[in-house]
Image (cartoon, rainbow, N blue to C red; front, side, top):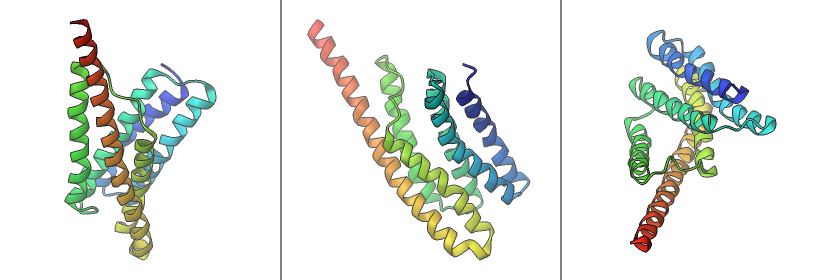
Length: 189
């Protein structure tokens, strides 16, 4: 439980309320950009350290995606509140989360936990976590707006598309698991 990767994930979780405070309350946008950048970068670091040191754990497998989702959701809500991203973009990402929440509920009813993270989902998360600080930079630094905006939105749109593709893959996995349970029950009966 007390491993370097898990410690990094806990620190990442603490970064979520820090970002929200800096961005929404203190309006310290530069500091918020730094927190987002560090939070996004450390997502890759904790996985790399876990594999390198042989410290992959079930807790880490749960904490890492939780930290990712919290960063994404908190950032989206904050960005929408301050009009960095349009509400439609936020709604598209939140709809995917609701779809997965429903799938997870079905899996739990059949005795399964969340499916393993797919590389498409990891790539989508990486793109979104890379896009957010760049989009914020574009919103708060007028001299960087054109270039940072183009790069940030390119990453964000690719992230959104891959996020939905990963969501579809998770739903397919869930359906296959539920179907296997039903097939076993029918065979026994």
